[in-house]
Image (cartoon, rainbow, N blue to C red):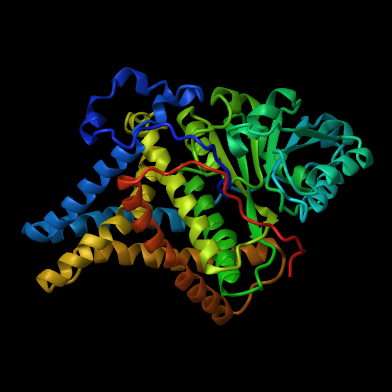
Length: 472
């Protein structure tokens, strides 16, 4: 999912006033996302977050004090419910047949990119898998960007480079900025592919992956494809089992259903494929964000590109195995996801993506960020006034949607992997366990949105430690 690296410097002042949010030049906003060198798009995140937090808290408190507050909440729940029904009952796009041997005669050139820093435990396995794909050797290349690793990664890459002819290695100098985004931007001019694929160093892929992904690019409007993610170490403990239900089942299901109704498909970092022309329209990867994939997702849609989600193939990755690691990882994801709304709110409200995508984005922003943030003052006011939380209907609806989506997603994954459909009660047990695990997001989102409004996030290198090992 989102990137695990970012630059050391931040691009906004801790002392910016909230009032300056409303005085930002209007004309500049339309062009901001096109230039990664223009840091003005990313200024004032703290003051913007503070402004939103003030509106959400004061608005929630007001709903408890006005006579029509409950009616407003019911109306909001109704809007949510209509959208949920559309998502659940949508028919997902049918996936095209994989490329046949005849199709490979005219297949596009692909560049596979891996940004690696201190990945000696996993980089060898990934390079061997990427260099052994069932695809013409002359039509793809593998680039590993070694971001000044201090372990055995450089030595392993040198050995692998001598073993595999189409493996290329770029060694970044000490102090090179931009983290993962900077590494990808640095290698981009050296690549030849019409399609660029990005993998994390712990990825595990099947030999036919390219054959399955590339047919989705036949539609010219498709700017990117995200492959379903799977957890390689899912059987370790409760946390990895929860990530299996979250990432493999719920996230993929929701993504496919949103795309089916003309909504937003999103990139998840590992296993993402991007059309070069679409990436160039977006001026490459953003080095001023902590989640380059979520940021690129929004910029692609703002430039009117579509993102498809491939569910029949998977890219495996290691899930974090402890509660503290999960907490830090999810806080990064939550903050990066929230940043993009703060950065690009002007082109979003101007409907640059089109009505269906804008509305879908708005609904999921409310459910993922606004409702959890509003839950704190809602609960406090409910205690003070001795009444149920006014937003409880909307919150209950989205929790029910999560439960249903996880159940249907688990069954869909088992079908796609030809494992057979497990019994109803086994799948239901997995769903309840996953839903219980997902409750941590309520705390993560509420704390993240509050923290962003009062304290500047220092952008620095933070990475998930990969230990290696095959799927259990």
